[in-house]
Image (cartoon, rainbow, N blue to C red; front, side, top):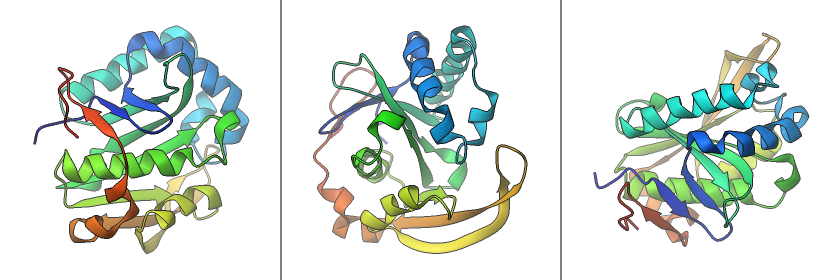
Length: 205
């Protein structure tokens, strides 16, 4: 595996591993988007958190990234002065598999950013990380989120009933979408125009 990709350039964004110094930008994005995110992201119930708390959390994200335990990314504008959201290639999907997660700043929803980012990460997962399967999970009620894997050619597999919890502790269903390696070449993600770079700045894609 030549990766992981530490930095990914898409048409409109920079997707890169978090740094502790990103904490003020991240906090500003979450504070602005809390009401929008709360129905779908249970972790938002802990907000508002301090910049120092977020810096500590980002150190943890970076540590797990460097150890190839989990790959959590920030989504930033091209000059990296604002956080547009967060995403990740998560290792919880099992052997030779990664799960894509994402959230978008409330001021940037309905602009196709989640689809753009997920296409980029799908390409990175298969071509850099070398996985056999990529998954996207979402709440069945989250119509915007479910539209992303559908647009990218993922296959709807199942709804896992009451497998997770909402922010207030109520049981919640989870919709599972998957794309496997032999389906990837014909998917829209394979045509994504991106650049990806490793830890030393070397080009991976």
